[in-house]
Length: 213
Image 1 (cartoon, rainbow, N blue to C red):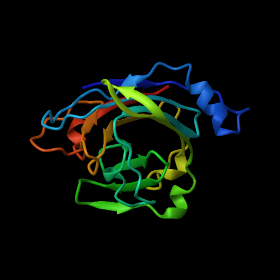
Image 2 (image 1 turned 45 degrees about the vertical axis):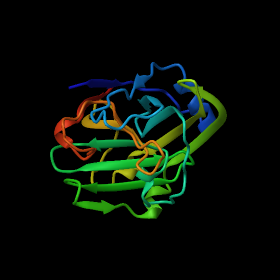
Image 3 (image 1 turned 90 degrees about the vertical axis):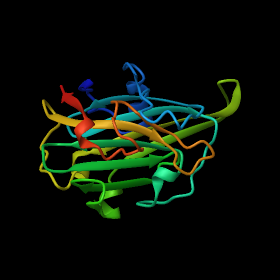
Image 4 (image 1 turned 180 degrees about the vertical axis):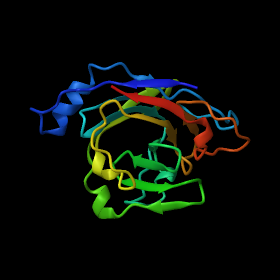
């Protein structure tokens, strides 16, 4: 099981998300480099940088992939697009699935397993801030493709099933994913390895450990 130390960043003088983005670039990236289902091969690479400022999770994904798709809207089937995901649990009860496509459209649910999901209200999701950038002049594994990144500021108020006063010294569990179910090259990459016959990100038993500083 992987363990992730999530550093604290002092952002009290920063208001623009681009400033958050620049600050994040000083952190070390972690790779989403496990492919539990090798039958699905794709020209896709993914990594992320994560921190917190006490009141919000600061999360940046950096992606290279051959195909780019963004058809879905808020609380739609984001996993069919060029998609990155964070699943996170603050205890033993349930967990949140946060899914983002390359344009920043977001789906957030909460529940105990794959079938038991409750979508969060759009008004709650709108509290999340993001900026995204796409470069269409990329080369990945000798093929033309796309580089894209998304910077996310996820306030503690997003996690409506929990009363989080601060992320300081909080322990959690979770996983990071890169997928694209509806792409010409479907793929299902994970940060922490999952042992399952078929692609299934809703495996809380394979969540890694998060330690917020």
